[in-house]
Length: 421
Length: 217
Image (cartoon, chains in turn red, green):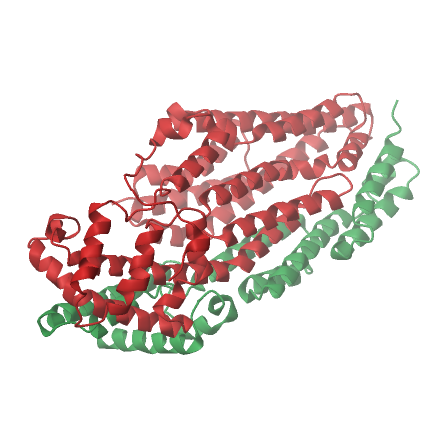
C-alpha cells in the first residue's frame, strides 16, 4: 500500500512543481535528467512504502531532497550562464542592459511567486483567509524588492545597481531579514499572552533584543541573517534546561493538589454522585478506592519528587512556578481552598489514615458553597483572546473559538500577599 | 554613457569593504580583495574577463569556510559536537574544492549527513520519566491488600508500555540509521544531560531500572 496521497502531495508537491517549471522552460541536460530520476525515485518510494516514518527516513538516507535541489540549482545556473554567453563578447550597453534586465526579471518573478503563495495560503485558510495578511508579512519583502526594481529602472548600469544594493543593505534584505522582526514580535506577544512560564518570555525577548542589536550594528540597518539564526539558537539552548526543570516541579505540585482534592472530596457523602466517581461502574466502590489508595500514591509521589529535587511536597509549593501560576491566573483552585488543602488536608493524607469528621464537613462546605474554584480562572483565555484579536481583528477569537462561560464560584480572588500555608 | 569599468571597480571595492576588519570573514575579505585588485589593475573592462582566473570560485569557497567557521564557533560554545563535526567536515572539504558546483553538492551532502547524525543522536524516550514514575506508584504506593494485585498489574502494564516505546523508537530510528540501538551512554553527554532536570543518582538509577525492565521483557 502506498503512502497516503495527501501526505505524498504535501511532501513532493514542491519538487513536482520545480520539475514542471523546468519542463515548461524546455531546459535539458544531465542535471535535468538527474532531477527527473531523483523525483521518480521519490515517487517510487512513495508507492512502495506505506509508513510515513520509513518513507521520510529513506528519503533522508538516500539524500534525495538534497540531490534534487542540487541538480535544480545547477540546471538554473547553467541556463543563466548560457543566456549570458549568448550575448556579445565585448561588454557594451546591450550586455549591461541584458544583465540588469535578467536580474530585475528574476526579482519581478519573485514578487509574483510570493503573491501566488499568499493566494494559495488564503485559499487553504478559507473563511479565515485574512489571517494570511497577518501571518505572512509579505509586504515588507515585496516593498523591498519593488524598491530594488525601481533602483534598477533608473537607467543606472548593472554594476552601479549592484553597488546600490550593497550600500542600502538591500542585498541582505533580499535574504529575508526584512521579515524577521515582525515575526519575532508576534512570538514575543504570544509568549506574554500565554504566560506559561518566565523562560518562554525571556527567550523571545532575548531574540528580539538580539535582532535590534544586529540592526544597530549594521551600517545599512539590516541584521546579518546567519548571526541572527545562531543567536536565536543560543537563546533556545540557554533557556531549555530551565523550562524543563520548571515544568517538572510544576508537575510535582500539580499532581499533589489533584490527589489531595480527590482524597478529601471522596469522603463527602455526595461523592458517588459527582465526577470522577459517578463515571465509574460502581461509584461507591470507586470513592472507597480513592479514600484507601490516594494517600499511598501521594506519599510515593512525594518520595519521587524528593529524589528529584530534595524537597518535600509542601516545599514544592514554594517554588516560583506556583506563585507564577497564581499571578497569571492559571491556578484553577481558589486561595481559600488551596490553604485548606495545604494547611489541613496534606498533613493527614497518610496511608491507612482517614480524615476527621469536621475536615470532611469543611470539604463538603467548599463544594456545596462553590468556593473551590478561582474566580479568575478564565483570565488566561481572555488574555490570549485579546492577543489574538490584536492581530486578527476585534472579536475574532470569540467568533472562531468562542469564549468560556463565566465560572460559577463564590470564592474570593487570590491575594498572594495574604497566602500562607 | 556610464563608465562600466569604473562602476565595476566601485562595485568590487564595496564587496571587499563589506568584510574589511571583520575577523569572522577574513577569508572572504582576502578573496574579495584579490578580485578587487584584479579589476583595479584593468585599463579596459574586457581585460577582466580572463584576469580573475578562478578567483570567483575561490570566493565561494572562502565564504563557505568563513560561515561554517562562524557556525563551528557557535556549536563549540554551546557544546554541540555533532553539529560542530558537520561544520569541520565542510570546512576541510571546501578547502580542497575549486568549483562552485562541486562546493554546493558537497555542502548539501554533508548537511544531509549531519541531519541524519542529529536524528540518530536521540535519547528519547529516556527524557520522559513518566513510565518509571507510574511503575513506582503501582509498585510502591502503600495501599490495602485488596488493591495490591491491581496496582501491581498496572505497574506491569506500564513496564510493557515502556518496553514497547523503546522498541518502537529503535524501529523508527532504524529508518534513519540502520542498526540504531538505544545508547544509554549518550545520556551523559552534556548536550543531553543538561536538559534532564534530575540529579545524577536519579539518572543512574533510572538507567538501571530501564535496562532491567527491558531485559525481563
